[in-house]
Length: 224
Image (cartoon, rainbow, N blue to C red):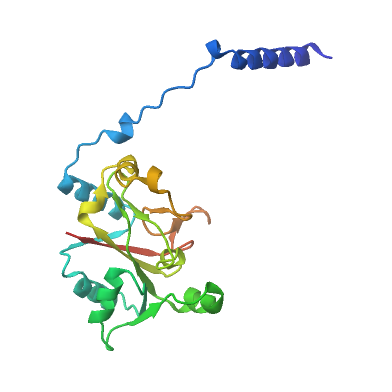
């Protein structure tokens, strides 16, 4: 055995011995102060959230809670949206369906297994509307918890994704959102999502492109 090999093995044995001796190894204490200690008020959180998400080409529209449907209709017309995929059971979607009429874009439902309408979903759906669990001011992120009423593909496939966000559900940090919503106690869904803007990539010739891996447009309706 060469001297170099003996030296390497010797150091490995010394390291293993040190790890087995508790006097030489202690688990470092975690300090979440950096991500926990934020003192932004509600107005500051909303301003920061909007600044962050708009910096990556997301849209934010601040509206009152009782005017979000007219604002959505205006945006659908502005973006020439032909149809909109919405839930059948979420309360905002039920309100939307009650006020809809035949002159507006078609409302679609996610009632079938994906295998039965995959081609339609990927090729014919213009936009979707989902709710969210809240927003994160520090990063300009939305928290989505997909379920059977709003499956993950609703926020992933259509070219335009509209999201309803309650202004009082904007948290300063990711840590605050997890703590105040009790994620550790209630558990998390299989597909918890953090969305911080429309889909984008620069993999192809280092040129930034939108909509390659998901929606090209993210439109957030903040209900104040």
